[in-house]
Amino acid sequence: MKKLTKHDITRAFNRWWYANEIPNNHDYLLGPSLLFALIPILKKLYPNQEDLKEAYQRHLSYFNTQAIWGGATLTGIVSSLEEERCDQFQRELNENELEVSDSFISMTKTGLMGVLAGVGDTVDSGTVQYIFITLALPWAFNGYWIGALYPWIGFILATYSYGNYFALLGYLKGRLAAVDLVSGKHSRMFTEVLSTLGLILLGYIGANYLQIELRSNLISLNLKYFIEGLLSLGLILIVHTYLSKKGLDLLKGMIFITIIVCALLIFGIL
Amino acid sequence: MLTILEAFLLSLSISIILSRGLGYASLMARFTPMMMGLLTGLILNDIPNALRISALVQLLYLGVLAPGGVMRSEPAVAVSFAIPIIILTNVDIRLSVIIAFIFGVLGGFIYPYRIKLNSKIIRLTEKNVEEGNDKALFKTIIVFPLLASLALYIPVFFLLYWLILPIAVYIIQYVSTTFIYSALVVVSGALTLVGFALSIHVMGKSSQIFFFVGSFIVALLLNVNIFTYALFGLIISILYVVYKERRVN
Image (cartoon, rainbow over all chains, first blue to last red; front, top):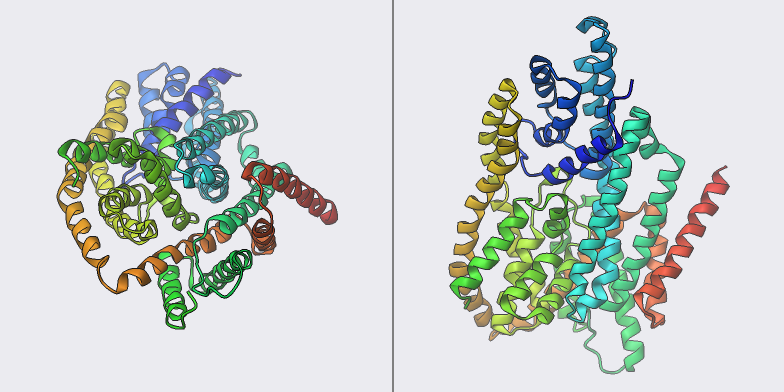
């Protein structure tokens, strides 16, 4: 029997969206944020104070995931599990007979949070964020304030919209929602279009805004610009290959490029 | 040097961002230098230069991800020091990249103390959970962690902007008169290449690197607006993915 409404799920997502990293701690990581998100739902499902206390206990547990793909989806999934549990509870099954036991809920959370976070970090923090940023970088390089404000607002609106959708999807489809997001055809195609677009935009920014200047005055200005671009591209690919082998570390890459550039400086190329 | 008011406003802004007090909207504000750059520009009343510096520093941090929320170098902290230092010393803007990185690392040391404070507050949350007290839960999950973070970061960053930043300005001014200055500017500018190398990794699979290389060369040859370019890029991306999907089937 359905007790929760779409409005309840959106409200839980809003609370999760805001709490997110605020109470981050060593014991439960983002656990308290999920508990905070679920409070109104748990109060609605468990009018009895003792049951409510137990429900709070159940959700003050270790939880760490990406906010949108992981957190929003799981807010929905856990809400639907709690609703089911409450329903079985009312049919007076005891703890051993419950299909949705405490351990089932906690296994669902811990089992899915990692996979979903993997997708979410790559898509949101790694791609969507930088699509907005690269689109606005030309403004920023020209000193316009919109270059900072546009990507910030764009990213917030985009992630909030699909986050809310994921929360509802999680509630309606339960754990199948996670399967859809991680390996579903539409989700895979969507993320691949985004990553391809992201790389294309990255190429545009690289070609237009990298500042590697050749010292030589012998070549004509147009050609010089083109060769400087190719040099930057070549250096990026060299660093890329190096980091693929040695691990993705900003500092390692910086030391490596410093050595190369120093060599180019000594030979009088830059 | 910065006035007391400027140092205070900068420390207030960065503390709000680091405390994650804007919900998920804090993510981009903390993990990219753009928003803190804009705020710094507002506070110092030099938005154009602030944005130019932020954009350059952004290139370094393009591919930086923080799985689990831990960062070695904090982009927002980084740019909030780089902008005043560059404006006050009037050196080549490219130097902002290396200055930003150094202060970003300092920020990376300071940030985790917030988690330590939260790990004390969580004992109160545990108590409130046992009592089933949801009003108190709001305090210990949201209000106390926010207040604790602000109380921690505001004084620390205020002292850094007010007392440590002038030392950095002095050092940079000195370096700009020595022979290593011009080489340092070139190296610092070249560091932004690393951001691109990392970002290719984070965004796509290795089979997609062709799109980056191809787009780079095309963009060198063409002179078009980024939005036009993005539109064609989007069409190409969709065609590519649909074609690939068909071939698999």
